[in-house]
Length: 325
Image (tube, rainbow, N blue to C red):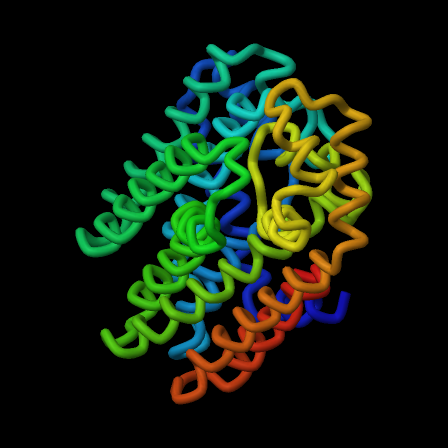
């Protein structure tokens, strides 16, 4: 709660403008399309990527407003990836609400995601610079690469941890990094300052995704807003699961169950999660996330800018570990 209050004191007015911008960007949609897109916009979320964009802009002169277009576009890109993910995962709920694909079907869901991506790029082209458009477009391309790699690795028990890290870098970390760099540049950052914030965002994103994957094996459904074990159900083997497989030498009960692939049942998924929780895998993955947060903070060690904003960025790195951010 304290972190949220401090965040709002720094960038609260700009965040309100981001929310208004999201809705205004959908005003020209047809009634049916707007109904679908507004379902996404009103589904909540912490607006992590807009927050990083605004803070990065404010880190120089204390003014987050220049990054509002980046923040709006970033959240629309994020919304698009979520609706596409829900189609891929056949998810029925997200953040406690029915998914778009559950209400309107996959056809509408894919088109809704595409529409959001297109609108985000229009905002970036009209209200930012060519460099910002390149940064965000390259990030989208890398994210798609990560999704393709993830699909190729489904149910693969023998994949290396580095393959996992490569995937989450492309799927999550580079998005955080792009928001930080683009926001910083909109705020007037030098190349060196923007690069420092890119590194911060990249390491923060790695930690964020590892913790998110941890929640999928260690938390309750009401905590994560979607069914626990959803990654495993989809054949996605995350860091704690990979650690358990390695700890059992690929000959244990977890490997036998995961080896069933798509034939694995709900009770068997729950059994794998129990094994993950008892093999030290949760603690191992948490330690990996902690190291990423330390690297994020180290990226700002020589950063010169607004002291209050820099302190907030450091607090956010710590907040990722306890999911207060």
